[in-house]
Length: 93
Image (cartoon, rainbow, N blue to C red; front, top):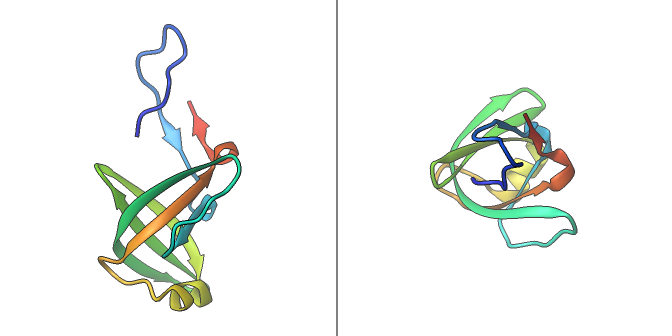
């Protein structure tokens, strides 16, 4: 994932809280969102929530979704998904 760099900055870090990553099976739109496609590479039960790992190119994103969302979306390893991240959820440092 590449972001525009401020003048004089050569590298940095990007952090996204897992609960801020939205996962859907179908394409969706949202105002002020970064929308990407990816593939589920892992699902781990974390009690009331499930950790979903989504691979997008060389980047792996972690999403935390409810058990009901996991079953409602019928997500499993190798599922193709669409992910959304609100611009305000991107933490650059």
